[in-house]
Length: 406
Image 1: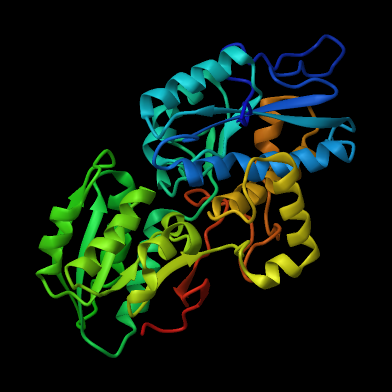
Image 2: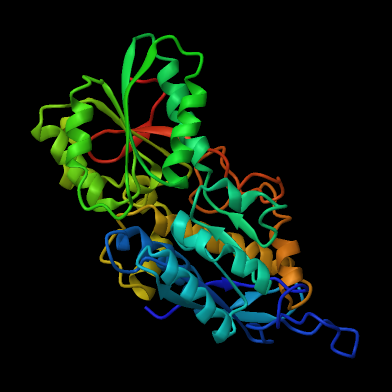
């Protein structure tokens, strides 16, 4: 796929040039004309995280493909534009992600974002600030991207990792039973955030004991040794803060091989029923819990709704996805695209500055496929566009809301 979602800020950009055009109108930023706007996405399109990585492109590609064929999107300045997306493969490698951003700048994109990954998005955050290019609605729960003073050109889309971790901790702390917890986390900001939120939520819970805690590197190809050690703790709950799809599958399989069958807590981005839990044998465990803020494309109510049918038709027409997407990121990037359309409709000038002002003013937007009670709000410093999560439990086919643990 050759598509990129780059969103660029104005004013302070090197070469961004939002200066007066001489007739009182602001000069257009790079990547936008009277008829089109070009966005860029760097994401892992190959390698072990290619499944969710491609979905971060495909949802937006499908959304804007359908909008373009319907005539385009009307912007706040009264002009109707098509949205062109260019994508770049970073294979979940931070250095490649930085190189991709530098190529985006050379390609003249208007703005960038939506792509998956904490280390990869961090790799070009400072460069985006230096270049004045908006890095928006990125799919990382790293709170750094929602800190307006540290990241003035950025905003995250998905709830921060601490929120997800805390949701698991709160559910477990409310249980009337005693629990022993084993933790395996990715040795970076991704894993640290999940564990931090979980530990804060159980800090005063007398019924919970952490009996083992280990880490792994995102470049590891096996975590069998860690799993064997954690299995020996006899923990009845396993918090696996892991972002690498093949490792989650092999972890599910390995714990069964050693006879360890705890309940699991899994991050939202590595909890796909069809792509992860089914091949991993998730039905063998007493409970697998994850969190969500959006509907699942695999759920019958989604597929039977008019919006769901339109989503699946667009995915089929404009992407290489084979059938119903296995990862939630396709729905998430559709939500991101709908949020961008809200910002475009409020842009009164063809500049990155006007875009960012519009994007950061969205409040109470009920985007397509959001769960009831979840809305888009970009106005709160320290919070991403989505900050509400619900804990869900795997039922053998999909997920249902978990009112309690067990």
